[in-house]
Image 1 (cartoon, helix red, strand yellow):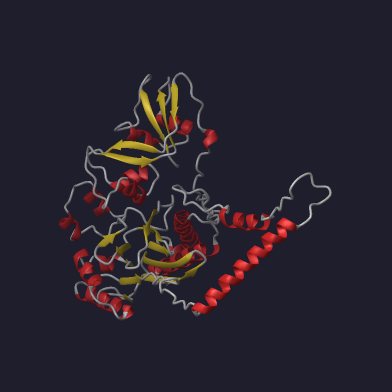
Image 2 (tube, one colour):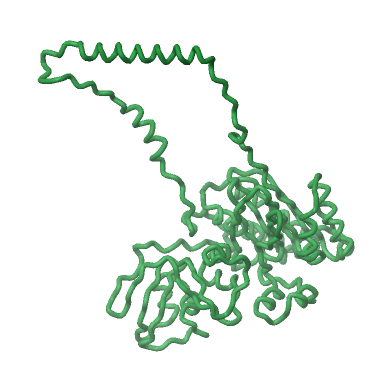
Length: 452
């Protein structure tokens, strides 16, 4: 359901949902740019995202939804070049891909995704906004953030170059789940408590319920376009849930059948003992039952390798190249294990999957996840966090590809060291508690290898 609101003449929101080879996808966008450019931007982003997901192969769904938004960003850049009057167009986007086991999502901007598990409402996304950065840094309170005059100032959106960084995550599916995608016109008008109350109510007609939700937001503000998309996983069918009733034959048939089988077995045994030996046999005849066919059948069912979910993206569908006038936007590939530097007297290597990071004052989960190239959901699961709240001084477990110990040499910089180990300057800086990029000769550094 969507509504232009009470102030703006045009509705620059756009929502879409439909089937793909990977599952059902839902997309909500909030365009910007003025002079109808916002309407165009939101529609282009939704269409480009849906087309990319529909046409791209692969099993790494988090990489798929991330690259779909990067592809949509390129589409906007191309459109802006071809239509100079719309050079400032842009859009937010939140995309959710529903599979039987989990919901995979990505977002850029301040359009949101909520998950309801039958009891509790949870916000899965974190706004890319100036106010959210101030809130995460502890500069303002949650109450101040709710009514801050700069709520509409975004820290990143689609339609910019260099390209933005999509936030990606996943959420396990249960039979009582429901998901809400919405623009800030809804989330700025209704609090999370009000949304929780709405989810907890009865919804015999989901379409009417969503329309009523938008109407409620309209009555409590309506200063912006309002869009809400409710995504409900289908109920799983219990094929074997109802026990089947079996009726045994009459007892006389059971007794007769047992006697017949016993007589047959005795006859077979007598025939085997009385059967003459083969002239070529040196001893008692051995009867071999060839079960190769059965073995092959079992092997075909048990030895098929199952697809394991990778903790990091392995193969991501490459977005189509951008227009010739713009530099290409591409995701760097993950470093190969063979590319790790060889240990020397000044460098030691530790193969590790977990790096322990001490949380610093002012840190938040989004910043840490971005610095070490992992998702917030990975950090929450690995550290058993129910929310994104973290405490300064606590140790946070972070999945990395490997860790190294490096002694700084003459004229080395953090940039050159990061390039040597194929990691990022930010990861090295945070791992060693460095406030800036200044290092000295002989200094020992911990080098976490992360995706760049």
